[in-house]
Length: 201
Image (cartoon, rainbow, N blue to C red; front, top):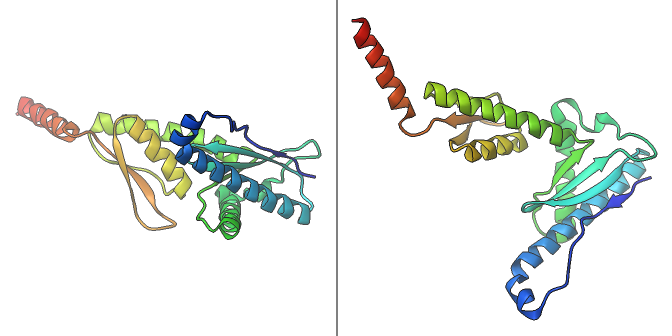
């Protein structure tokens, strides 16, 4: 048995507010609709497979966020996450296709199961911060391990928030993030090495 929790939205607005907020309101309504379609698809899937789990809906920035969480009837089977989240990624793509089929629009919704992505996000933030620190100290580019698109996005966002830049390199499924040092950092590191060499000469 599944239960769906939807985000609270307000539809009250003055005529002037309605006019100025129409684009944002329309976009939010579309995201809510995406979440509802996704919830129907996932509830049907869980029922067919006779699996426990409730559905939580939210809006995270510019995309719908859907989560399958433990219910009062039982835990969500962790096999729906799979090794390194591969089954979760596949379910997310299937859910996006279901939404696109129903709405006619490409979906960028994020699916989480039993808090897997939330926990992984916290780990990735720490990985990104460590890479930023090492890049600043060394003045060199720091290449990270291959990651999924979701993981790379989290790292890119954290690196940007830290004041550095980053880029993705390689090809799937071995695509990875490269953290780029601040402009001038490498030159400063080279100057320090030259100064040290001169002192030793």
